[in-house]
Amino acid sequence: MRAIIVDQPGGPQALTLVNRPTPEPGPGEVLVDVATGGVNFIDVYHRTGAYPMPTPFVVGSEGAGTVRALGEDVSEVSVGDRVAWAMCPGTGYTDETVVPADRLVLVPAEVDLETAAAVMLQGLTAHYLARTTFPAAPGHTALVTAAAGGVGLLLTQLLAQAGVHVIGTVGSSEKAALAREAGAADVVLYREEDLVDRVREITDGGGVEVVYDGVGKDTFEAGIEVLARRGMMVLFGAASGPVPPVDPQLLNRSGSLFLTRPTLADYVADRAELTARADDLLHLVARGDLDVRISRRYPLAQAEQAHRDLEAGGTTGKLLLVT
Image 1: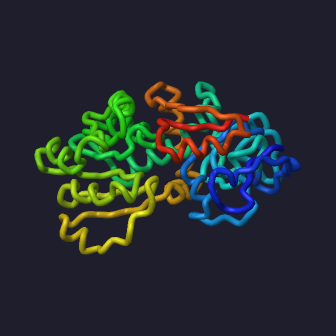
Image 2 (image 1 turned 60 degrees about the horizontal axis):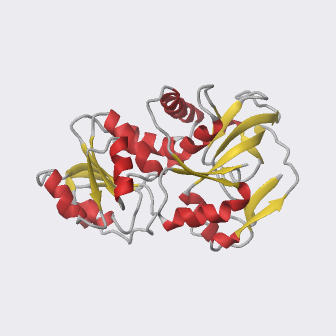
Image 3 (image 1 turned 120 degrees about the vertical axis):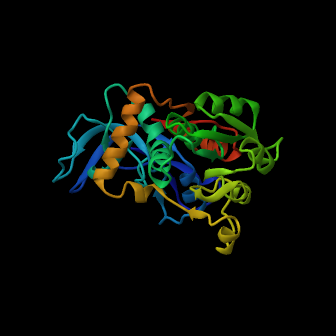
């Protein structure tokens, strides 16, 4: 099998293509022929050591493929099933991998494997953010940072379909068009407009009920400023870097605000929640109710370039490694 590994944390050049023996599935595990793996910011955090991993390690935690072999005591899937997964470190950037059976979900016949891989981590993230962390509903106004990014486009669609007035932040006119197509009612070009002033103008000074912030350091303070009284800051990422420590009194002074830092792992911790969330998400895709934008596809050997493109911030939608 081919795999992209990291021997020592570092820049994109730390990603190395190697050949390894095909792994054998143990009890409760499944061997999968990987069709495609998703590229995510968490892979960058692992590569750089921001989220430390024992080295050497195979990069990636998301993908889709076909079940080739079963270990003992596997009942969730069968040989030949088309499956997808997320949040399984060491399983994405390779053409064969072993995945715990209880972390796999079945892919509907109407959804191709590339789309399934593209929607798992980012789609499940958008799903829990919109449906559970802050159950968005008609009458709410939400600010979505990086609204043309992978999570942003999916989150914007789910919110708009729920009747939420979505304000999206983007960095270019091209990205503004994508955010509007996804359902954003208003778009703020943060390089040209003051985010706080523009949101106050849009909301007649009332602010927004929720901010979904996957950018972090560069947008957090502005996000706090535009929240309405008792609004919620949902900080789910740090694409621009981690947010400095926050004095809880800031939440008090700003209107008795709520602050949460969720992670997908806690919203798919048991299999029942994972399958319920994934089934809902994949059937939205199958029915055409959720558009999954695949921005770029790279051969496995070009993982380094995929990371460079992701970190440069010019991409929209999803990046995939195709085996």
